[in-house]
Length: 266
Image 1 (spheres, rainbow, N blue to C red):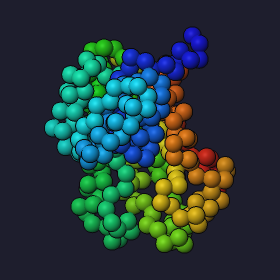
Image 2 (image 1 turned 120 degrees about the horizontal axis):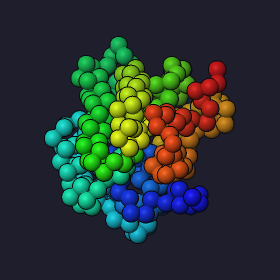
Image 3 (image 1 turned 90 degrees about the vertical axis):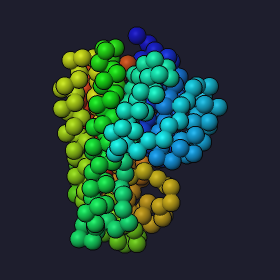
Image 4 (image 1 turned 180 degrees about the horizontal axis):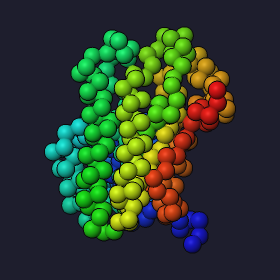
């Protein structure tokens, strides 16, 4: 099979949670550029609708925007049911919704409610989505599930560069959640791969520039072998396409680290 054929997603349908901005939008864009129709979700429907219009107009694909809070199972089930009704099948899930929640990130100051909410969105929400994706993928005997983890699951963070730049670091419960995503990925792969469903994870490092200060970007780059942060709109897209396409048909249960080498350098 030719390389272009291995990466062609024409006729496929993907659901990207949190697909309206940042790395979720990068994932959606990579799939759209390869011909995939999309469902993108956001807790803010207007945000999902705006990104859906832009993706559809730019790439001549169909895009369905949905409002979704992945921590509520009834909303997850409804979103997947609507997705199936829309195109009749679902081929790819990018489990991206999550992130760091709450205003205080210091563990000793962090509220129990913020900790629980972060775990619910990042871990329980991802499991809810994987469950509903599997429900629809098992009968067709195929599918790709890509869970977005983080290098926070792989290394303890040096919070001095956050303090130096007057920034909040990620909370400890975020690292706990993303570690859970990697464990979930491996066991889901063991459970679903015999039924034709590939399950893999991506662990991104720091991406920018967004609203990050030049000082933080430089300090982060100094801790990274490639001497820079990941580039929004560029550096995640190849990994997403690889794991979503036939190019990775002999890969399952894998955690692909996309961090410029941050996690290997001491």
